[in-house]
Image 1 (tube, helix red, strand yellow):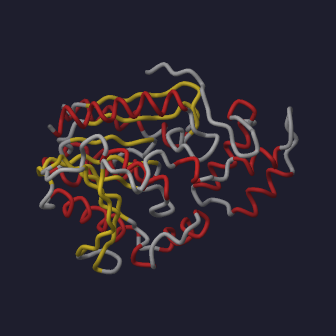
Image 2 (cartoon, one colour):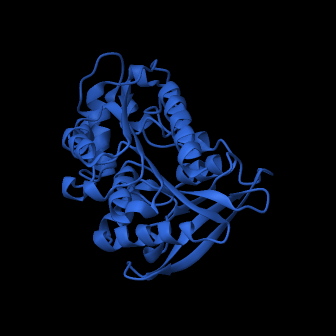
Image 3 (cartoon, rainbow, N blue to C red):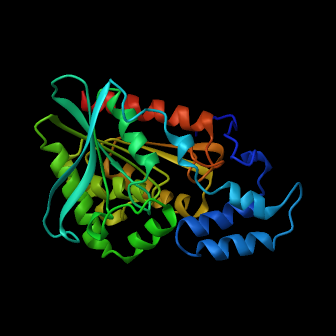
Length: 307
């Protein structure tokens, strides 16, 4: 268990995480995971009675503002980014598209796949790929929505689009993305994978599917892999969980027991006072201290196992 002070970003409305009622966070979690739509999310929030303000204003403050999430510019001279397409046999369309970012220099570089949430390749995930590139990694952020035309520019439509995809074929698309990156001419053939929310679950899935072909994983608040598949995991894992994330956290006791039984090198860190999505700096769910600490652990993990 890690310790973290509850430092957060304020929303454009000036509302901080500490000012938001936990029931609004729980409602937002339902919305984020597609169990209710935007209209119902805002309508149910408007009907809430909370202390210290308007629940509707709290709800509106949680909607992402991606201008806040850009920490590394597209034009940063320390990196070179481009959109690439590559084959994806057995996937939703037979091809995939992703955002490939390399550090300056000739390489080769250790490679890290960055897997998005349940809404496609949004600006936050692209920024995470750039963050990895400036640290010396070849990063690929695939867009699972490519078969439907790609991320549509907003999370609501992106979430609806991702839900329409054939989910086993989407996992195949992401598996093919990992294989493409690992075998890229600029890659050292050492592969790490990180991901967030849905993408965190994909990290665990890929670890179990790729076996020895994956060298390190860093899932953020992602559902655990099926326990029956855990014996195939060879990659060391550092898993990041939020304190207030009952649905995801409930999958970890059995996962940890299976990891121990299989002799997998793993760590699980739960960050006090945090919400699901605490690494995403585009909403007040962001927790600066936990995001910083977890990212330092992720980078150290990749440096150790991908060197």
